[in-house]
Length: 137
Image (cartoon, rainbow, N blue to C red; front, side, top):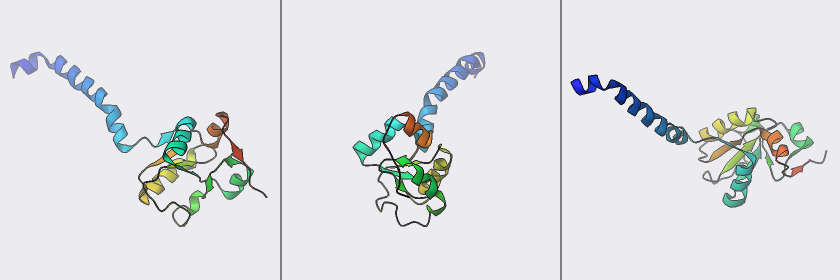
């Protein structure tokens, strides 16, 4: 016991460094739910991720990521347009990334296992010079 008391600083340093090493793994256990535009494209191309835009229909019509499926946030829980395979990766986006974070929580509650939000939303998609589409009005 005297050893622990005499060397409490070393034990504190050991626990702190161990905690700092484990922190990224503990955060990863919850799953990092944000991806940048490049990672989103990789998920779409390599893992057949589905791109879902949770913006309102009028926002979607003005411009959206090429290939994105429009499912407004308000209708996310009641829509029949979501993939049947709940293991399929989903990348969710909106205008600036605020609504897509809430959409990730809704989709996880619905049982989807691999859901990510596009950090920065459509603005980040545009900034990365990725293709956009407009809906016919």
